[in-house]
Image (cartoon, rainbow, N blue to C red):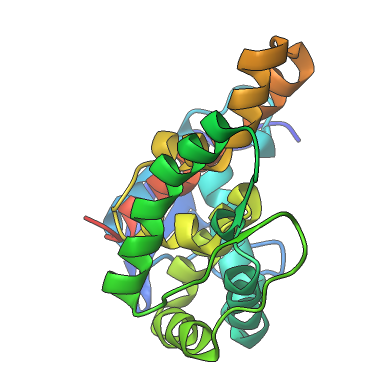
Amino acid sequence: MKRFYRTVSVIDTDTGFGITLDTRPVHTPERQPLDVPTRTLADAIAEEWAGQGPTIDPSGMPLTQLSNVVIDRVAPDPAPIRAELVAYGGSDLLCYRADAPASLCRRESQAWDPLLDWAADALGARLTVTSGVVHNAQPAEALAAFGRHIGALAPFELAGVRAAAGHLGSLVLALALHGGRIDAVAAHAAATVDEAFQAERWGPDGEAIRRQAAILAELEQIERFLRALGAGA
C-alpha cells in the first residue's frame, strides 16, 4: 500500500493514547481505534508510521502489529492466552536437561538454575527438573502460582509475554524478560544454550544463524514493547 499521509501525531484519548495520520485516527484491522495505554508506546508506534517510505511495509511496524493483536484478539477474551501461558509453564524448556555430555549439563545448569530459582522466589512457582524429553508433570502449586501472576497482567502485557514465550519456548524466560530480570539478548542466549553448544562442537550452520538472528531481533522488539508499557522498568 502506498503511503497516503504526511504527518503522524499522538493524541490523548478516553482510553489512553492514539495515533493520527494527517489528523485521521489509526484503526486496527478490526476497525477498532489503535489506542494504547502509555505515551511511550504511542510515541514508538508513531515513529514506526513516520519512518515508512513511499510504500507502507507492515513488517517494519512490529509494535503496531503487536498492539493490533492486543486490541483485536487478546483484550476481548484474555482467558485463552492465560491458559496457554500456564501450559507453557507446565512444559518449560528450562526443566528439561541433557544427561550427557557433562559439559553441556553444566552449561544448562549455570544458565537455567538461577532463573528457576528466581521463578520460585519471585513468583512462587517452584518447578521440578528432569533429564530427557519425556513430559514431567509440574506441581499444581507452581502452575497455580503462574496462573495468579499471569492473571494480574493487563492485556498489553499479556500479549507481550505470550509473544516472548512463543519465541523462547519458556514461560520462565518470558516472565523474566517482562519483569526486567533479564534482557532480550540474555533471554535468547538462555533459550539457545543447547544450539550454541552443538554449534561449537560441530560448526556453525548458516541457516540456523540467520533464523536465530531473526528471532533475537523480534525479541528485542518485544522487550521494547514491554518496556514502553512500563513493565520491568
